[in-house]
Image (tube, rainbow, N blue to C red):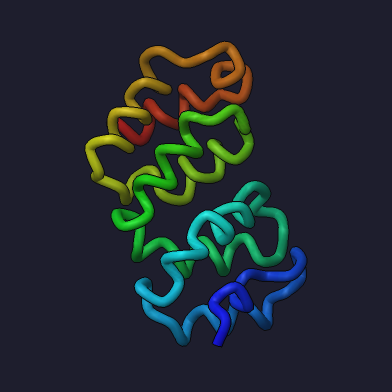
Length: 122
């Protein structure tokens, strides 16, 4: 099986998301960045089930999470914080959440990411 076939084709591709559940983290590790892209808008039908699938692997996806939190897509950061923020204890993720709470960019303030990050740190 081509592991890339487990990447949803569109925001309604729940059938493909269901197939993820049959695979281990080791199987899907190469497509983690692709799966995280579907969390850019949790209003998409595939967003919630992908988030639920990835939640147990929060620590293992920490490097990708840090990249997102250091990026410029504030809505994506929002969904990552809300989805994984309280579960990830990885030092680099915690450090980035603390930075957002204590020294946010203007865009992070405008999107209230500093408020969410502060709540996570409590």
